[in-house]
Length: 268
Image (cartoon, rainbow, N blue to C red):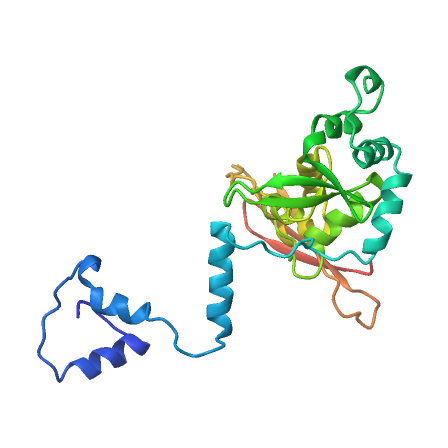
């Protein structure tokens, strides 16, 4: 009722309320038990898809049911059957696959001369497994404390995985945080956080859409002049439709002191 000049829907509401005499009294949310009970009324319809999805989500959060293992995005570059061969071809993952397949963790003296990626997987030997010939790593989600198995990605497929998690179907070119969250749903490799941040930073589509973070303008300044033609501003406008004489640009010049403008037609 305190609107000075109500418009649109608010004005129509006020017009409807003019026929009633009432006073507005605040009631705390804790006293809205009747409305809360109606909004949380259980669904009695058998086979309700919304209720089934909600119950499955609650069971997954409580750890009562295991969600089917799947990756966060599908890769058209390589199929599921080719993961094992791609990992065997990778020089850094090949010895790790042999260790996990044999079930024996080698001593540190045998690993000292290998790459940092191989050493990192060696330190996580207890969280690795081979499933259908594919090397996987167990990752515990911080929110639910549930264990999710991630595919260890060889170096040749990391760019494809980043592209699928960042710009693939259903991804939407999210930022580094959401892209990292999607990647961790099914994939892992050493220093993947750094690679995700670098990939999001150099994404051409994101850079073209967002533009520079700081679009600053030069501060306005007064140019003091004391006589005509001491300082002249010049600018070019165009291109315009070509004239009969072949001109399509205009050269504009203005004197700072007298504000006298001049315009000259230019062919280029």
